Length: 189
Ligand SMILES: Cc1cc2nc3c(=O)[nH]c(=O)nc-3n(C[C@H](O)[C@H](O)[C@H](O)COP(=O)(O)O)c2cc1C
Image (cartoon, rainbow, N blue to C red; front, side, top):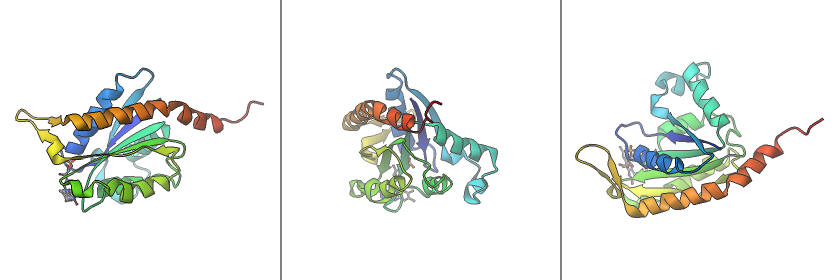
């Protein structure tokens, strides 16, 4: 199973990227899962904003989404929604660019008040792109992802527990995702 970890914060260091990295670490313990990473921040900004599909890095990023069985998408909450960087990238994918994939949304926000932002803002966008399933999202506040004096972030135990639940759900969904891929295989002659 190929899982693409997508980070979409424009800043570094980044709490949402730390949350994503923590989930990526957990995935390493599961046999048969191959992970790769995509940082939208590292894509050429002009190509991203000018929808330049001929740009090799952008084309590579879009191909990575196409090749993945599942996406884990991490975003900061900006203005009560997900990041503009993420929207700019999603807008470059084909209309049904998430067809038959599983998607797990992750977010970090300054306050708990916007914990539903992923569900009211991002989920409808993802659903419009034909995924097989969008898993329950995981939201952490900045207070649950604390900066360490020597660099890096410490993630609260309850957030680790939420990520472990997401890991279990994603693992259970594997046969469901594979059966979707099989549905698309042309029948043997
Ligand atoms: C421009 C901007 C807008 C933000 N808007 C919100 C918001 O509406 N709600 C919220 O809870 N946090 C908001 N925040 C706080 C960030 O979501 C929060 O610090 C998040 O963890 C940042 O993630 P990052 O480090 O991955 O960029 C905002 C931060 C910035 C810089």
